[in-house]
Length: 206
View 1 (cartoon, rainbow, N blue to C red):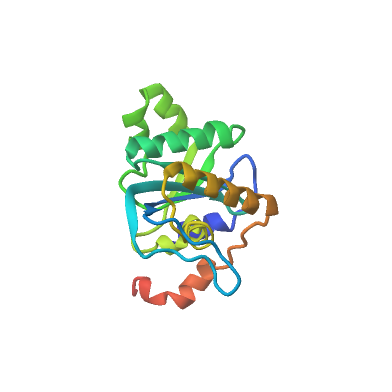
View 2 (cartoon, rainbow, N blue to C red; view 1 turned 90 degrees about the vertical axis):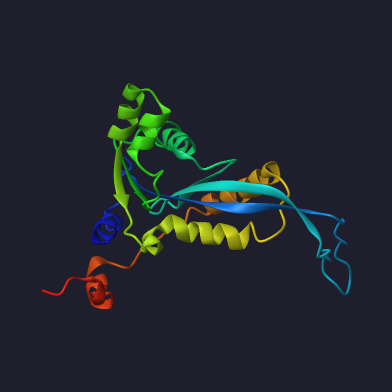
């Protein structure tokens, strides 16, 4: 826990950006009957009946001190999907970074082994060398700022019926652009000193 909290206290450095990532899934749901548009006296009316169109997987990354996030929608979230997401992050979104300080949970796909399973050894080693991984502790995913961003995404953008992955990508892109254009950094205030006081039960008794 204190390892992650220490990373959050580091000053902004484009050469060593702190980036948080997380992933989730969302049911794709379509309408059976077309919604009745809003009119004076009532809002949009949705029929209770709906049809399921499978599940979309969502990868999100956020650089808290820059107030910048990136979201991708995929069909699956396997080791190879994670590895490709990380490659794009390093080569396309952070090409000038020496190392990316990556905060994420302990999901079994979240590790350099996934890079070696997906890419040739030399390429996997190149990518792994540019990562400084910091895992949140078990039952401590609340320490991951990307999880907070996923909550905002769900409440602000995905809290409605979305029938297809393409529709979801369009809506997420608009949400992402709006959030990024604001450019507001995230000021994480909970420190290791706070943890030692408020979470003292988690520390060993000496």
